[in-house]
Image 1 (cartoon, one colour):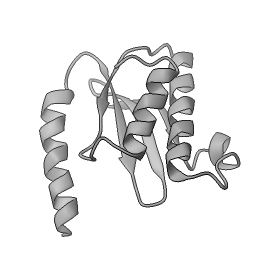
Image 2 (cartoon, helix red, strand yellow):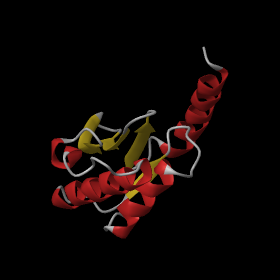
Image 3 (cartoon, one colour):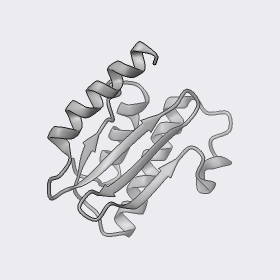
Length: 118
C-alpha cells in the first residue's frame, strides 16, 4: 500500500478513538483527488443522517468551473442546510486522517459559518 495512505489510515484510527462513540453526532469528511464528501453520522445507530458531496445533484451544475476549495465550501454550506432541516445543531468533526487545511478546512469553516456547532 502507498506509504502516504498508510500514514493517513493510522491517523484516522487515532482520531476515531478520541472522536467516535460519544453522545454527539459525527461530521466525517473524505476527499479524493477530484471530489469531496461530507456526512453526519449517528454512531450509536450506525446511520447517516445527512450527506453532501461534489457529486450531489443539487450542487453538480453550480460547481462547474469552480476551484476545489470553493467547491468544498459549497459542500459545507449544503451539508449545514441539510443538518438544520434535520434538526441537527451540534456535531463533532472527524477529519478522517486528512490534514486540517485546504479543502478539509474549507468544509469545516463553511459548516460553522452556516450554523453547525463544533
